[in-house]
Length: 286
Image (tube, rainbow, N blue to C red):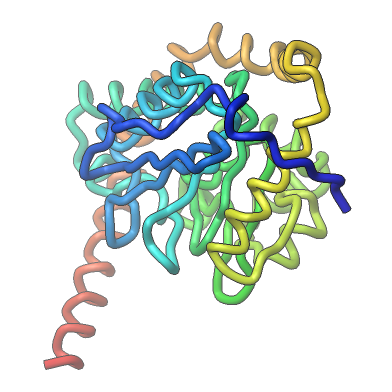
């Protein structure tokens, strides 16, 4: 159990502010302790697109600029964290936009992964693909029990995961669990995710997950800031540097893969199946 100490409000550097980055896509709220809650609100399923990745990156920059005590990232939806990358970005894509979207994904990921903030994520529902990878950039992950599942399901839709994703998952889960997760597209419940090291705690619901994230942030009340930041940088700098150096090539590889005739044929089938499901659901409710 953590030994926690509440910081007096007078020494909290970050205070409530009206964020210029609050858009229809995200919201930022800062509590009395100086902990920022960043919520995705591209409902109903927070599909990640170019604009949402940009909003996430800009929001983290703003939280850093305002010297907040820590960050909790979550979803405005009560049951879904994020369905992953918006399929409209991947199906019959405009190459320039697809390239920009992937570059912005890397920018958002690197901003979180390399941030000096204490970063946490409250995973409060279904979390797949790009959203799952983004969650792994945070220091501390708390996931709700119940129907929530998380995982990288790329192979299930016919897309081989990029090696940098495998390296990231190996950092978090170890090689054996990462290999299984990548090949099988396994979707983990909170209990299973806890067993393999994908998450650090399980929570009853979103509010409980946020509170547990805040408890983790408070853990560092006793740790000198410079020592914490430098130690975190030492652990993360090699992987971050590799992403920075290879971002352009990784992006080109992604664009080539997604634009290929084979993947686009899979996307056609996937989109057609989605239309049929929506139509059947609509007819049932009529």
